Image: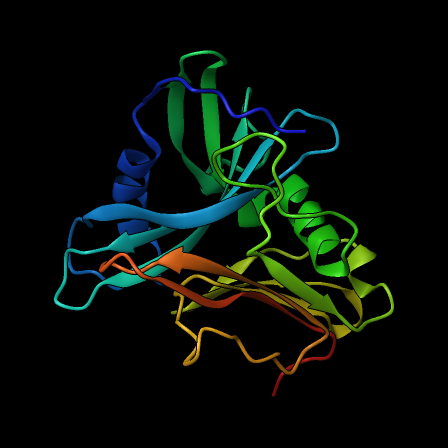
Length: 219
């Protein structure tokens, strides 16, 4: 179980993301973002070593606010071979220095996301220890494909990050989030999915797809 500490972070997560987001190919802003936290959830690392958080942030710097999904991992030491995925370092008031990574490049997050899609684990509240997040939903109709290792390198396009897997499977994380028309995301044409909720700038809550697993190559 992940323990959520009531303490300080220097710099804050939003400060780290404000510097990192403009370097991403899916960032839609024209300059430095104005980020506000809009939602998210956590997953537990079975070994209790890596913090796993799916942050939802909204950039209000432009005329039309854009909401992003940012999977992050927090480690007590650098992750070998993941220098390209480093978001930054923070000083945690309890745990000391923490290395924050783009979680799409961290095998611990990828494995736990696969477990979430299959229903083997449950999403956890973003801010309170040992409380499930009932607003995060998932489905899976496959035969265990998510148990295979997503060994290929994650690649970004203008809206998603894709993680390839054996046998033609691909896990796509929606970096740009879109509200479902009736706040009830339609099941995608895929083997599995994760959906969740977040706050809009006016304070209302909405829902949309976070990730989709496709068991066969897309056209």
